[in-house]
Image (cartoon, rainbow, N blue to C red; front, side, top):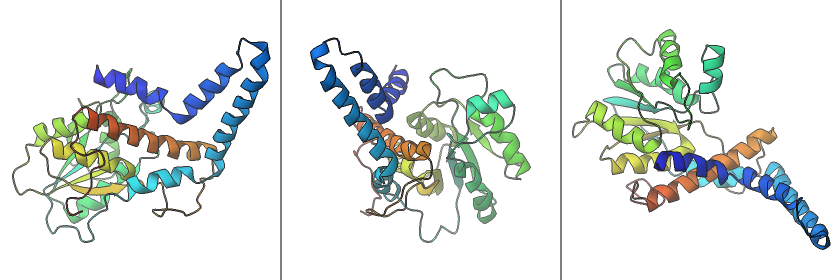
Length: 267
């Protein structure tokens, strides 16, 4: 039930969805005498929406998330395993077109290409079934397998965890799959903005991992004017950031992570 609720709530709390829904509802204000007030409110909401498109709001929201965990200045000499969180594949388009279609998180799938050159004996795990509330017949791994084989990443040694539906399950199911031993070093590959929540969940699951963030979308600096070229990207950055902040709060309130905003252990 938590999974279904989180997906529906995540859609409803989207800033764009809330603004557009409220603005649309105000056009049906029943009292004629208040109609002018309703339209002024609509103008205000549209002004907010416009500011989301032309101001670096997404960058400011993403910077704290993307800079919370950084990749080690010097990677370990030996790594026992590499965990790649799913979420880089557009399941609907991939299923309809019959070939791999990726989204803005595609760097998650590319990272192992270079990492396995450094650590050829490391175990590689892709974790993630379907994060859709209404999953289709295809899983992310169905399209990643041939891609990684063509890229000479998968030589038959890759493990695919296909049951998890969210990051909490990613952590728990991957832990149960690989059964990490004390002292082993595992890299966790996911999008930079998603790393704080992911690290908190893996820690809660008792799985000690090393952050390896990819797919950055901010400049990494506060106060730097940066507006994405397209409206979709500008709004997407805001929605991605809000999704993570809401996810952190919900996971903290439900006891799935121990800290509201997980940080590196040396901080």
